Length: 85
Image 1 (cartoon, rainbow, N blue to C red):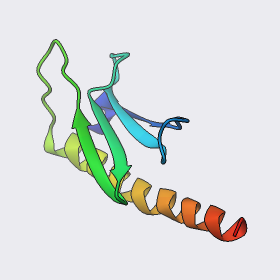
Image 2 (image 1 turned 90 degrees about the horizontal axis):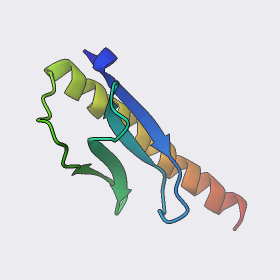
Image 3 (image 1 turned 120 degrees about the horizontal axis):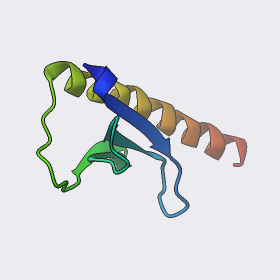
């Protein structure tokens, strides 16, 4: 279930948009990055020393979080651009 997964939003000066890092709760390194590229979601898997096995519920939780994240970030960018235009 999603209780095994932790998702953190990261703002990075080197990235156009914030992105999400997905961790197993007990890990300090993420196994997945969910970023926005060309205004679409992009998924980058990181190599870990262990196999990555996700249940359907865990993957659905990651996907829902990413799908909610995309329009919010794009709206924030549009609001910012409209305010400072």
